[in-house]
Structures are given as structure tokens and as C-alpha cells.
Image 1 (cartoon, rainbow, N blue to C red):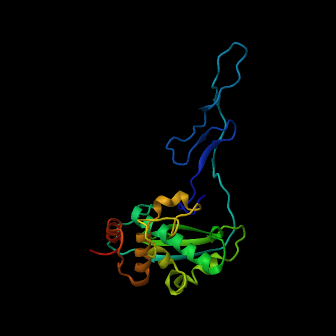
Image 2 (cartoon, helix red, strand yellow):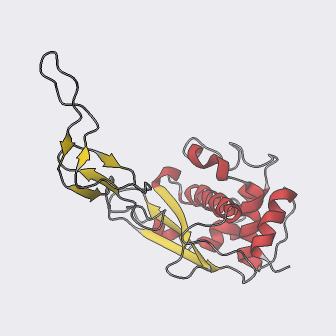
Image 3 (cartoon, rainbow, N blue to C red):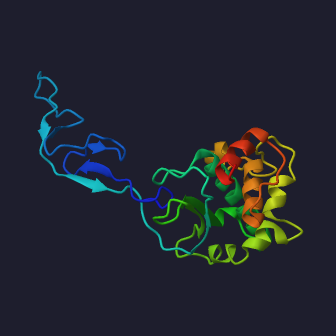
Length: 231
């Protein structure tokens, strides 16, 4: 089960032979199916992939933890392209990911904690396909009360603190998209393709003022603008 993906994605696994089917496969395991491995043949005999009559079961290969979490939602303008189901448009996904990473950078610095103590996610909020939710959670089992402080201090983390804030992280760098001085890190290596400081800054300023006032990567900004503002 994954909150990042908007719900559970379950494997189908035979409880007897272990044959499995991935979550996104259109071919479920039938009640009677061939094993994925042969049974040991008699001496001189041929390998036999015999039929198994085990019961296929839906299984979530993961675990659940109880932890602290806080979230902020924002509505998409009417002119913006709507998500398809739980899929967020690529440009908005890049902007949201970049902003979340910058917020965690700033929050960890201000709270004097390790950035790895707080995780984040992005999803379509509830049943409304025009609301996006950014959520933050404690990575520790049971929570450490860090995530509960992100949203109450959201404005300070985003802009108000003059010494270190998310917008400074996004705007005060000279890289073309992201680098180890602003957004990139070993922890974020798997989402590095979703990091663009210009799009993150544009979204941050849109949340603050409702307008798109940001210089930088014009190609990305134009694509984001088509999503965020009415032409």
C-alpha cells in the first residue's frame, strides 16, 4: 500500500508454489496454473512444469507505520489541465517535487535536524481532481513531531525567515536546473529527474501571490504557466 501512489497496488501470489503476478499486470494468476520452476525429475526423466492448484492471494509487499503527518492543499485554476485519475501532469509533478525538497531543506536547517527525518509526498487531494496536496511525514516509527511543525511554520520556511528559506534555495543558485548546492543530494537521487529550481520557485511564488513572476528556464516556465494560469 502506498500513499504516494494514491492507494494500494497489490501483487497476486500463489500460496502453494509462489508464482506471482506484478500489480500492474493485466494477466492474473488462474486458479490452476503452471509452476514457474520444474519439479525434480526421476533419474533420466525430463523436467516437469506441473500444474499447481494453489489459491492465488492478493498481497501488499510492504508495511504500515504509525507516524506524524501534516499537509497543505491548493486548488488548481480552472484553465489548468486536470489530472487523469491519480496521475499529476509532469510539469506540476516537477514543480511540486522541487518545492517539497526545498521546503524540507529549509525546515531541517531552521530546526537543526537531519533532512532524512522528514519525508514528503504529492497527490491529488481526496476525490477532488482539482486540488493538489503536499504532505510531510516523520520517517521514524511513531513520529518525532517534526512533520507537525512543517505546516504551522510554512510561511517562515517558504519565505519569511531572512536567513534561510525555501525560495532562497530555489532562486539563489546559478545552475541550469538542480545541483548539489540547491536541490540535489544523495537522498534525492531517485527523483533527480524531477528537480528543477525554476519551476519550484514559480510554484512557490504562485502559492504566495497567485501570479507567475519568475525569470529562469523559459522552456519549463512556459509549460508550467500553461498549467497554472489562464491564458
